[in-house]
Image 1 (cartoon, rainbow, N blue to C red):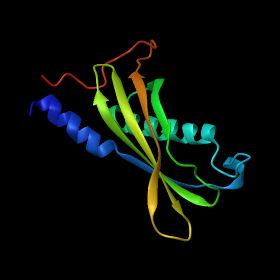
Image 2 (spheres, rainbow, N blue to C red):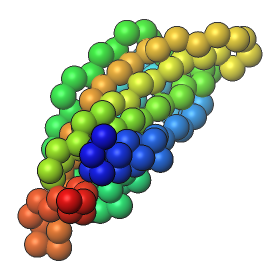
Image 3 (cartoon, one colour):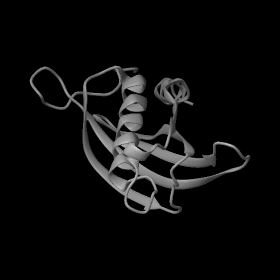
Image 4 (cartoon, rainbow, N blue to C red):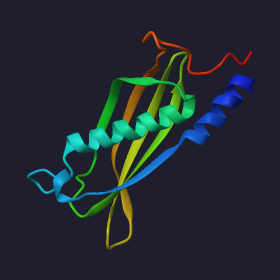
Length: 136
């Protein structure tokens, strides 16, 4: 493995981000399930945190590549959002977020949502900058 590949792997491991949230009525829709917009906002936040922990630079979200809603998330559930950097470019990162749902009072959990978010690191001039220092 090259020094760059080793550094990328090290940063990926250190930047994994996990957040647990409770689904309460202010976050639900008329079906009494988690509102999709709320889920997307939570996922964008977790992906931003993982990306920031990876490079420690100012970042902007440039796209959400794909979001798959596999299961409804009922009110009264717990959700765990897990963000992991899955691709590192020169000035950009991709972060996958998986959302798991579990009942508050019963065991078991299942994957409910997955999504991928892309970020670009920017400098003070708002132009893209490298996400990693030169490791050659």
